[in-house]
Length: 346
Ligand code: ASP
Image (cartoon, rainbow, N blue to C red; front, side, top):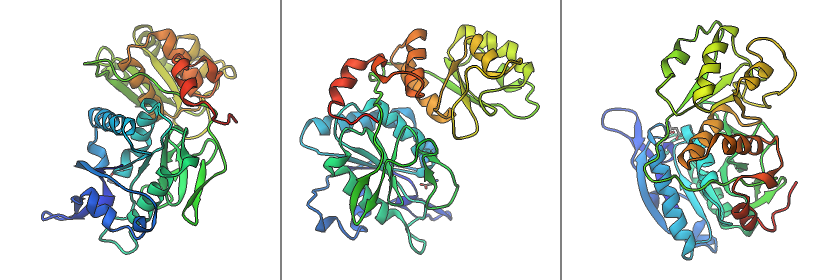
């Protein structure tokens, strides 16, 4: 199945100037020189025509519900087409909610259809080839662009315009499209799925990136107004010393996750010992994001709170999703292990 949400891949000139989402899923497919030669039947759904920036959690939960219904019928894989601006977040959300074996592949384009050499058709073809491949089963949600296959948990948008913008700084891509075939050179160590959101749960999670000379005005602004917070700290998980009392107070009241703003590597646990260091903050109740970057950490925290997870469950989940603890101890391990049977563990 192919679900279109909009994005640059679907944009055409707009009366007011610039380009905006307009093309349907069928029109996107018609621009691809290839699926007719594939032994694949593509069923299209026009779901949204939005820029990636305007997608919200409700849109994605609705997409996941649709995918679940269809995968329970006779669909072998799903492709979600959307704006690249939010793919690193939406794909991880889909990954957390998708517990079936079928591939769910997210793609988009960096060059809109009015430009010379738009990348949308090639990306869409590669995404369909991946979603249709038995080799892509049991890998959760994948992101496919520029003939690279990335794990949703690791992928980041790293450049504002380059076609090769999607990178997985922690570990590299899962694989590549070669002569139209997905070839995997890495495998997942684990899949981490969470229960669907409890009815009416819309937790609000702040993401706050600290910066030089930060005086805490933003931190003060979120106190009492959010259900959880992610701090994008300096380097291995540091903040200016003047933020420590407020952060400590906040962590007494709501889950506060400590991630690194650097974009690669993990938060440390036991190296630095000054006010505002990772040791100091973790001892005050902040929870390490491990290798998860701040954007992924926010998606995970939101999903955990939407599933009514308590503080202990949240800590356990972050230790595993952040690659600091044994995947066997994932809080919802039963369903996970059943669904990933046969997956090679690296
Ligand atoms: N601004 C666009 C969007 O996310 C960028 C893209 O699709 O590449 O909708």
